[in-house]
Length: 104
Image (cartoon, rainbow, N blue to C red; front, side, top):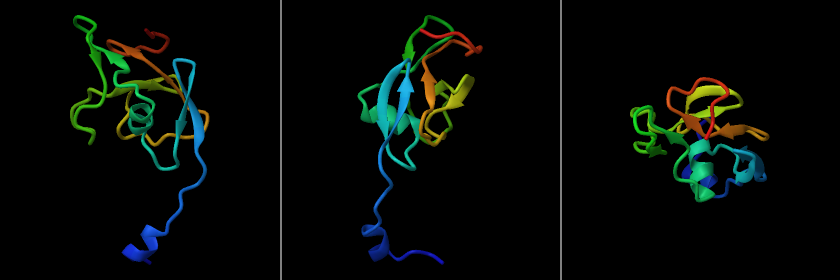
């Protein structure tokens, strides 16, 4: 059954939880994407480009541009704007192609 706007206004999310970004604790909210949690923590870049090592973060926010790639729980090349943050997730800054184990 679909919720009415009045029900959604009163909806209360679950409690915040922690993820880590390059070993730093960051607070996330249930249903929040990894990119949104990083933005909320003031982290705007979590990848460097293959050519030149330029910093990148979220650009389009809808999974089309691939600028927001990050290594999530050891899996490289995850689009942070599409990955829902989960308690205990470990996000690692991704360098270039994102082979597992590379970080900056």
